[in-house]
Amino acid sequence: MMALTMGAIVMDSSDALRLGEFWSGALDRPLDDGASEEFASIGLKEPGGQSWMFAKVPEPKVAKNRAHPDFSAEDRDAEVERLVGLGASVVADHDEDGVRWTVLQDVEGNEFCVAGKH
Image (cartoon, rainbow, N blue to C red; front, top):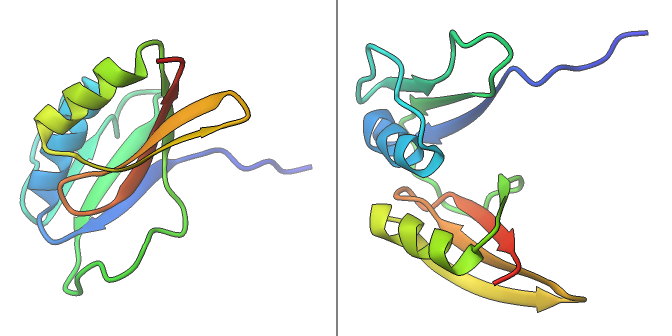
């Protein structure tokens, strides 16, 4: 039986370096050496680590992401504030069945969520 293993999360961008710098700050992980406007990455050479890749593409983002990363935080409000300070923007706050989360967009408009108690 074969099983899939996550290789990397890949995001298209208009400026891979700018997007990579945002996610480097958000994840508190350094960009890999050689990052440029064309391509940037986080953790490509880390064994067993979660890798992120950012690649420049010619077309702009025009619609909501069909898939997006979800994160959790002990203090959601403080984490959202930190991410906004890095350049994210808040799209919406939700509270359903005792679960609270905030939908945000990164510096290129890619959606992601942060869930938590506060």
